[in-house]
Amino acid sequence: MNILIVEDDFIIAKHLQFLLNGFGYEANDIATDYTTATELLDSKVFHLALLDINLNGYQTGIDLAHYIRENFKIPFLFLSAHDDIAVVNAALQAAPHAFLQKPFQKITVYTAVKLALKNYRLAALAGETTAEEKEDTTVITDALFIKEKHMFTKIMLTDILYIRSDDNYLELHTTKKKYTIRETLKNMLQQLPTNYFFRVHKSFIVNLNAITAIDYVHVMINDIEIPITNDNRTELLSRIKTFS
Image (cartoon, rainbow, N blue to C red; front, side, top):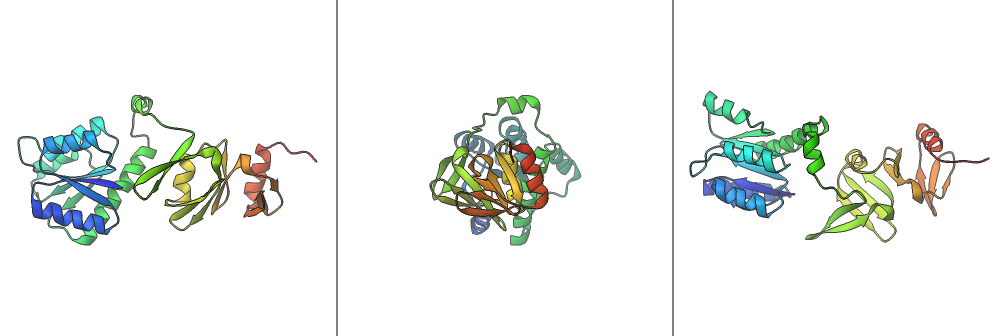
């Protein structure tokens, strides 16, 4: 996940960069003012922005937050040392997904990032985006892009045989190879078309077109046995044509 740091204090910015990279994120870009930040946002893909409220120049982190809301669909959190109620209220008007108060510690940075990402997901599920915004968003509906090393590999949905959950990791088994990604089964299921994919078990999603046989406790994909619960089996059989 790529994170933009917008902070005009070099020492604080580098400390944040060190911590975020240590958490496994990619925080390679630092901006010290509004203009530099908007140029970076326009030229790269970011998944989260950390915005200092006070920045060099006339425009503040609050101005930048409004720019992000108008032009990008990414979460952001505010960095602040303020105890001024007027400033805090102005920041709240931009609807940040979290606050990180200075001086901060490692655990507070970690918590604020996780909270921002969670609040953003919850807002999206609650329908925060408008219908117009959804219409303007281009989505490739027949494929997923899985990160491998330094690039994203395109996987056609039709090539996915089944998906297995292992705690916070997923194994995507395709016709060609297995991919491992950091994601939950619940979130993955929300990204897949329900007319092609079905959750047969708490740990498995299957491609309906890949199923070769069904018995009382398993679905078969070629010679692979995948467990299925009784309730899910009943629902699955109601969705397919069966003959006795």
